[in-house]
Length: 254
Image 1 (cartoon, rainbow, N blue to C red):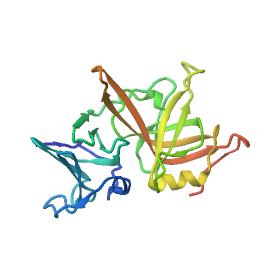
Image 2: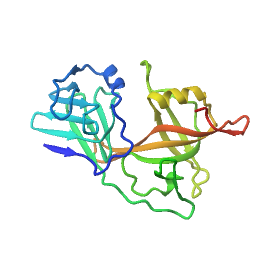
Image 3: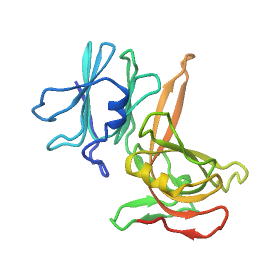
Image 4: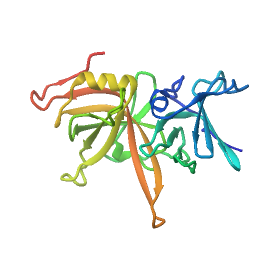
């Protein structure tokens, strides 16, 4: 059995939000685990994934039972259904994916150091946590790293699917001084409370925001054997808004 966990796991919320996964995939309640407590059991082909959202003395855990072997993933940040009917797990230092037929793939990314460019700086929030002002200054970005990005919306946020409580998705365009005519395009998803806050702002195409995000990356192997890297940002909060019509900066209501 392999247990994946980071040495330190900041900003991990308990209990883990499994509402979207519950809505998309059949599941049953697991017997109470001695260490992990109560969980939810999901079956994908011959592979079983048990999600423990609120262990008594641990961060959230996903325990994967395969035909030959086990995989226990700790420090879980998000569990999400895939469009193909599988499961995607983000944890503090990587990700794990289970297909609808039970195939399992896991990626581990060791923490990386930050490099400051001449144009960037490290700031500290009210809780004493450090973050980079611009994502351009992050080298070898680790999973779940906290970044603050200022950019404009490519289009108004839209629901990912037609299901109730679906996450909202939008693309945030960040100015790149090295390529002024080609902004960096960030895929941003908003769930739960962040989704409700985003919906209340009623943002439109061209509005600019300053957003606190958590970045996650994973690789997908293509048919030819090549690997394609995917990056997604989960919205934590929006600290400033600049409307395209008024161009007056304001802070969202708390």
